[in-house]
Length: 57
Image (cartoon, rainbow, N blue to C red; front, side, top):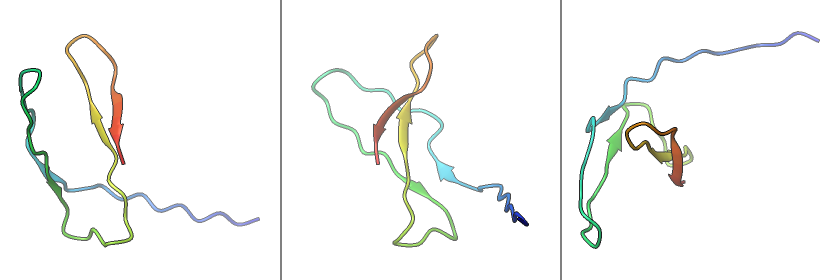
């Protein structure tokens, strides 16, 4: 079977990091020029010395 593979390098605009204290809310945002309403953004956090942890879809 022929297989087609598309590799896209995302040019995402987002804050490199955000910090907060427990009980305080923050807003995170991310934009991409080609994102559509049917696309999904997966949010992860990575604490120092630890691997990425899934936050939300």
